[in-house]
Length: 202
Length: 66
Image (cartoon, rainbow over all chains, first blue to last red; front, top):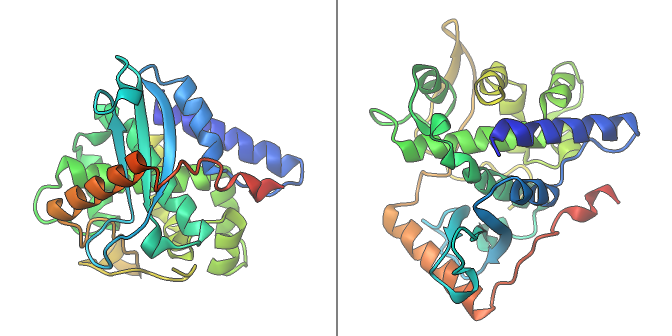
């Protein structure tokens, strides 16, 4: 499965929900089934809240795949993807839980090296929008930042994002509608959303 | 963490469209975490999973459409 396939599912879901007068929400938990079904090497995805984290230095989330490290997942070509969430920092905030878990889940698509390779277009996006890299961005930095954009595209697909441009609602209102952190509403409303959409959705 | 938290800031700069400053957007996932931090977090996470301290929480937002 490629990211663009998952994006199409998300876009269809919000459009059908919107047409049915439901909230235009994408549940992160509902993304797992199509990903597992359409990814041949993947057997399951589990989300794990992690406690006893350090205040300084521990990441908000992490994505890891396991096979052969534990008897449960020793079958060849049957990997478990674990999405860890730093529950010490995030606590019970559902918007942050959703964003961090969705962002980590997007690392599933790191397998597609086309997204991870540094292209001129991507470097422009990185330098325009994201934490300024020191020197040439590494594959890890590219992967991390693309995963954030993928999460934004999934949680607020373009048909919904376009509505936010002329929407008089404040950032908090937009964040509440899509259950995302307010912190990311600026990015959704920015022109760079369009750049990310063009780059990641085929 | 609250909805309006902006977390720890790291090196960042204003977006620029045709030379005009628009707004600051800061991402933060990599700012504080060293490879040692990441390794330690991974070790801790896997230990919690294997010991059963952390259980799968796979339907955490499924109630939102109810």
